[in-house]
Length: 123
Image (cartoon, rainbow, N blue to C red; front, side):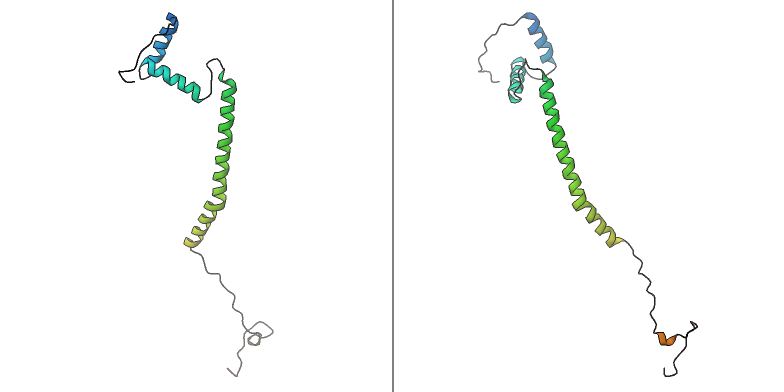
């Protein structure tokens, strides 16, 4: 507030003034600024001081739950489609793999019927 702002008075009951002063002392700013912020809060959230927050808080809670569930679904999808495959590929690249031992295939003519090897005379 600037020093040029006009001040007007409103009549309040003494107990209301005392209660507001106690409440306002817990906050920063002047009485006018605190009252202005309180009115802005009610307008911004489409609330009335006469409403109970039960219904409004339930709707806010449900909205937050839906957003959280959507975020969880997005994160699970990212993990499934991006993180896990990338990790698997990197592990495969850096993993030391043993070369599979291949069985040697020898021609049948070098073996006798009893399983012992023989050598052709032509070689």
